Image (cartoon, rainbow, N blue to C red; front, side, top):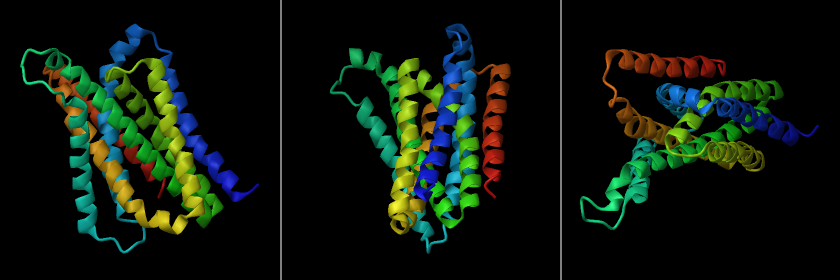
Length: 259
């Protein structure tokens, strides 16, 4: 079988497995789903921060290129400010009255903006995963297989968390499922791009990773964590911290299989 075919098959693996995990969440009754949703959001915060600080950012420093670290730091800052402006553009309205209809629905727009950003961030992340999978296969077939399985392992908890965020942002279950599939398709796009233009793709991988990391950090810190402060009971805070740490630990051990 041609190498490109193997690359596409294993690139599909991560997307199919992660979307299937999200689909399981779809099968839960509404009452159960509503009860579990806040816990998934807490877990998603840990998964997003874990993916950013334990996977994406370290990968920017280990790509084997002459990387200017100040430029990578600048890319992270530009990414954070860029996502802030993107969210502002979603929330901005031509209204100067405090009691207007726009202000009454602004919180809902804020949640929808978080959902849109998670789709963008997940798409970029999956695109980079595809590039990394193709690069591994073109280096060594067995390395490609191991890398693909590891990517699938750390995508599962992240995609479940992403699905929870989309529901929290006001997406319907059907719409969240469709957008999860669309975001997963970028894995194949990244793999094919890397296969045909690997040298150029490798040169920009650290900066794509930095942008993806900035999106995950922004969503976790600016959009999700503030919502946790609305519940100040000690028991709720303990559950939130436990689930955030769980998300980080899961990403840590899933990513450790890459080494």
